Length: 210
Image 1 (cartoon, helix red, strand yellow):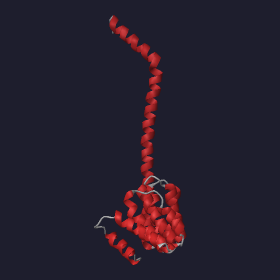
Image 2 (cartoon, helix red, strand yellow):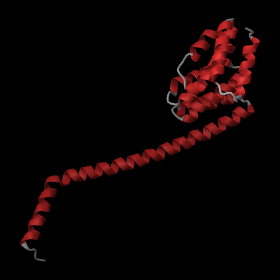
Image 3 (cartoon, helix red, strand yellow):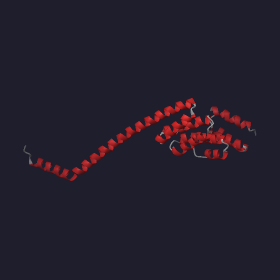
Image 4 (cartoon, one colour):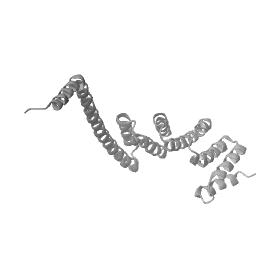
């Protein structure tokens, strides 16, 4: 097949371009393809790991409902060891701490809540709940100063009422009734008028007298 002069010049130009840039373009295309395949592979891996963590957590929920603390401890340890960075592991720590608290194992409850606080710093609401529960455990362990230290930590404003209410409880345990009154009053100032917890806090404040 014969080509005219213009077509031959175009063909030569294309040949020259590929001679200069062909290898680089091929490498870039290969790299892009490998990157895409790696990304898809990582997504599949993450989905599989998430499914495994979900299955372990489901088992943990059943054990917690049955009050089988020894099994809860073992399953929580497994979940934290194999999927420690997952949301399931964080919620497992809360669930395990509650189960242990209900069973009177304050040491394990405290350890789980401290693990959660140390290993999951992204979810502020989750951390606030963990600090409230840890302060409650410490109060039960007769460690009011440590409980107050937890309640002094930063937390979302939406948790102010709960933090101040529990702070009042801790101050009562320390015998600081004036401080407890101030804390309960501050909690009432932040709670909405129709909140059910308002009457509960008011009752505690009234019990302290003037």
